[in-house]
Image 1 (tube, rainbow, N blue to C red):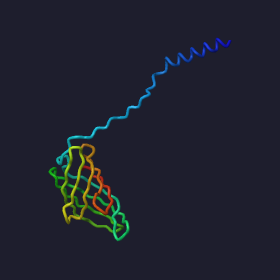
Image 2 (cartoon, helix red, strand yellow):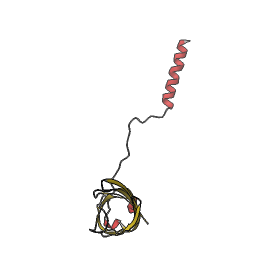
Image 3 (cartoon, rainbow, N blue to C red):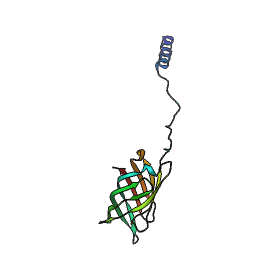
Image 4 (tube, one colour):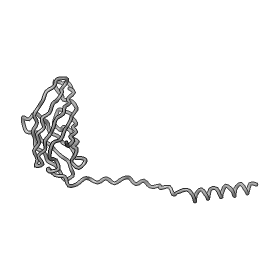
Amino acid sequence: MKLRSLTFLATAVAAAAILTPAVRTQFSPPVAHAHQGCSDATLVGNYAFSFSGFANGDKRIIPFDGAGIANFDGVGNVSAPFAYSLGGASGTSPYTGTYAVDSNCAVSVTATPGSGGDNLAGAIVKDGDEILATDISSPDTLTLDFKRQ
């Protein structure tokens, strides 16, 4: 009886091994490639944008957020007037600057002196339909999202 049970068990294990699909034991992560081919001309037209973060003033951190429409001209110039709320007070501000786009789709924006704005660094995503950026000017801490209209 024991021999019959062992034979049945061995047959069941062999059948299971044959019928079970091979299990992949090696992990292959997806390959990421940097996007190539961006230039100043990638950014052209109107982009709606919003931002939020904090401004530092008088030894305290003040909530700061706003929105506006940026116009990129495709050759390195941007204008982006915006409305904002700073610690509960609201207002509007002009913004002009220049921008540069690297072939890997990194973008930098430098404010024109006196334009009421900060310098930004970010990345172009979705084939130029969106820009994700951060303020690199001290002492503010802002994140921005631009979306092509």
